[in-house]
Amino acid sequence: MTDRSAWLTPRALRLHLALFVVVPACMALCIWQLERALAGNTLSWAYVFEWPLFAGYAVYMWWRFVHEVPEGAPPASSPGGAGSTGEPPPTEATGPDDPELVAYNDYLAQLARRDRSSKH
Image 1: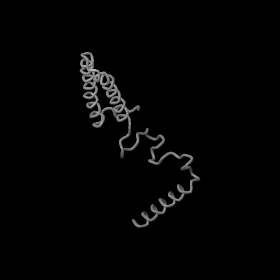
Image 2: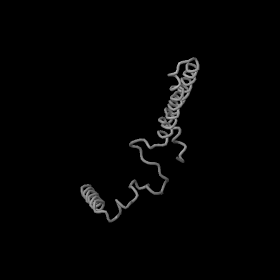
Image 3: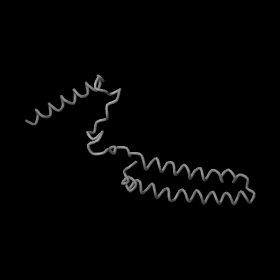
Image 4: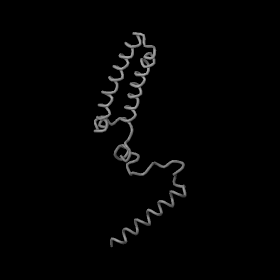
C-alpha cells in the first residue's frame, strides 16, 4: 500500500491499539507459562510455544486488516488512472464482446435516454 494516510484512519488506529495491547499480553503470558514450565508444570511447555504463535497471528491479522479495503469503500486509484471512471477494467470475461456486458450497457443507455426525456 502506497497511501500512508490509510495508516492513520480511525479503523487503522483502533487496529494499532489492539495490536499494542494483544502482543505484549501474549508475550507476558508466554513468560508466565515459561516460569511455570521451569517450575515443573509440563503442560505449560505447550503454552510457552502457543502464546508467541498467538502474537504472531495477531500481527499477521493486523497487517491484513490495515491493508485491506473496507467493505463499501471505493478502491484507491490515482487520479486519471485506471479505474478512475468507477468501471472495472475490461477482462476476458467482461470484454467488449461479452454479450452480457453489451446488454447491460444497452440497458443503461436506455435508462439515460428515458431520464433525459423525462426532464424536458
